[in-house]
Picture (tube, rainbow, N blue to C red):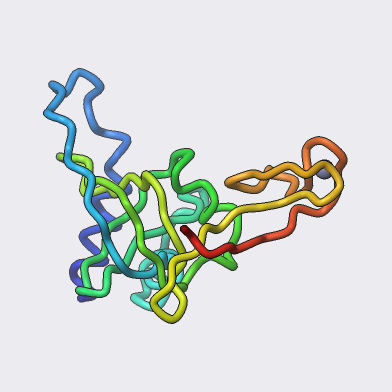
Length: 155
Ligand SMILES: [Zn+2]
């Protein structure tokens, strides 16, 4: 297991070396995964791996089958990078593993509780605005008020 995590770290750190002219491959298929989003920073720390502080937060999906898939940081995963309350929770994620990178791109996800699926989002009561991730400031971009983390059962 620790070898896998170490390999992942090496892969992540070498991402900057990927050539932009790499030929495009066929779009990978979207799959459904179950598991938890976890911080790789904490795991690397436990392994005694000194991560450069500029590497920032590294997250991965640990599937219920024990697979560890580092997350592509894009709009689909931003919510997890901005809000640690969403880490280490049971999730059902639709996403795709991008060929040649080992990175998981999240398309959508639901929180799982007692076998039920919940939509997770942020809500400003004042503006009645729904958002799928927090602004960097953590407050509503419209009124500056609190964005409340909400979970409603998916239909
Ligand atoms: Zn507002």
